[in-house]
Length: 462
Image 1 (cartoon, rainbow, N blue to C red):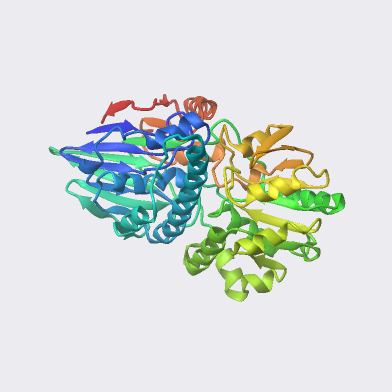
Image 2 (cartoon, rainbow, N blue to C red):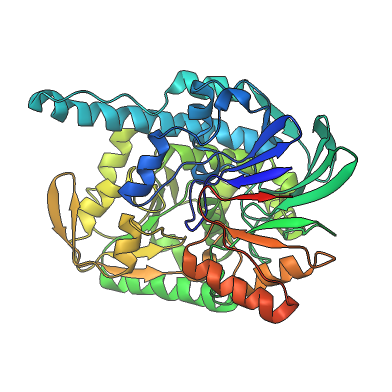
């Protein structure tokens, strides 16, 4: 048995791990690289394995850095089953269709420039036909139900608490009479969220792949986070402008809407117009509500008694482009939730273009911002950005709400590992190097385990 790290090794994107069990090959995730141009260039490079030889994929959840290269895998010859939670299947369909549309639009825009310069034209990384092929391979799983997906490979999903349907993957492997349990954490969510249940660690393992996005630090407490959101909302109203929220369409948007609904009075939200300006986020919110049985008990009880639009009567969903453009005529009193969450594309760029230069504008960052993204540059205090060929001075105030992250902080990651019996070897993935180093030091101090920080392409024998 052999494991190769084919992504999310020293970075937080491109999650992909190749597992060889006898003559069988499977992948854990197959995600896009995002952030720096050098990282994104890996998306068009050949896989470090033969896509046609992969027997199956097990997918942890529906974020592009975990599922975004599945259409590329299919385009290059993969034709096996993709096993994941049934809620994840619904979300992946929306996510990948949107990604295919944006990929096509970006390539067409670039090709117009290339054609004018007489340069060779680009082809999209994948298209809607590739997405449809991916969806035809999906095989639904339920939480905590073991299923043999290949001879000698049994998979069981545990709730990870990150987004709807997000799972930690438990693989029980057999080869030549040997048994081995490999656990891949996926992205572990915080213990306390408005909507989802707590993450569930496995009871034992022989080897663990553990995410380390926030491995070097903790988030603010829930109480401090709610107080901070209230302060940002008040500051935004007093400043007399709009509040822009770059929102991840799946996960953070639904969490924030739930918080708006439950704190509508105390945050004085009735004076605002709230725009959900993301077709994908609108669809994802509907999927969340269809799978409300996956919510925690308090959220289920709350939503059983109320409809979202009754809770937020000033919520405006704007799926059409024309509706989105009209929002930019509003100079004050608008809360605008739009993707992409790291400001790497989507409608948020248009709203930033119309608002960033205004000192009365407030920007509220509610999720992780990878190195190299516009969102990260805004958090780091950049003074000038370039949007649609135009230089924009940043006069807006930028607020980072770290406590709303969908990822566990260091204490929660250490506790998740600590609940696993036997102190198994652990390999830290899905984190920048400082996050991995911080978590490695913490695990060594708490449990005496030497956590490894594998490099891209590194192989280990099980």
